[in-house]
Amino acid sequence: MMGTKPQQHAGASHGSMRSYVLGFILSVVLTLVPFGLVMYPELGLSQGTVLAAILGMALLQILVQLGFFLAYEHPFR
Amino acid sequence: MVGSQRPFLSAFFALVATHGLHVTFGLIWMVVLMLQIRQKGLTEKNGTRLLCLSLFWHFLDIIWICVFTVVYLMGVM
Figure 1 (cartoon, helix red, strand yellow):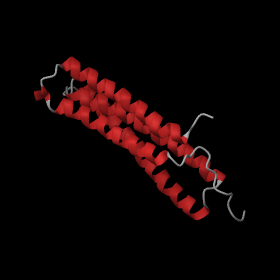
Figure 2 (spheres, rainbow over the protein chains, first blue to last red):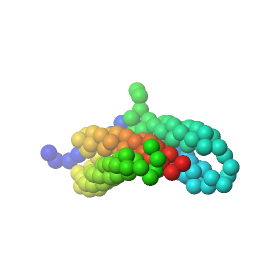
Figure 3 (tube, rainbow over the protein chains, first blue to last red):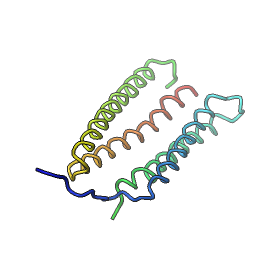
Figure 4 (cartoon, one colour):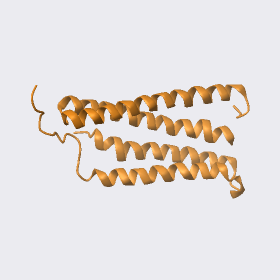
């Protein structure tokens, strides 16, 4: 078949670059902080606190990735 | 499960290696798709493939959040 169909912008919005950058920064922070909390027990936080923090931040990061990345590529119409 | 026990080590290698294999496969898919789009343009077929890859890739990343949190971080707490 000759030629291609014109570009379809189905689902891609032009403001999404900012969404990806912000989502990326949030993901990095939500990864580094839990690693830091576990790697530096000298901070003096209790095990329970650290556990709650890393689980909470894992959940947050999942939501960030769903909202800032996946939602842009697969928007509900 | 403590980081020095056998079940942990089995889980670690199984999960991380399996995840790594999926990531590798996804990267190959990504490169091939990029070449296809460069060659044939963003056709409807390529658009569909891109959406499928995005679902695969983001799902993998979300699983990784869970793996590093439970296996890596909780494994050494």
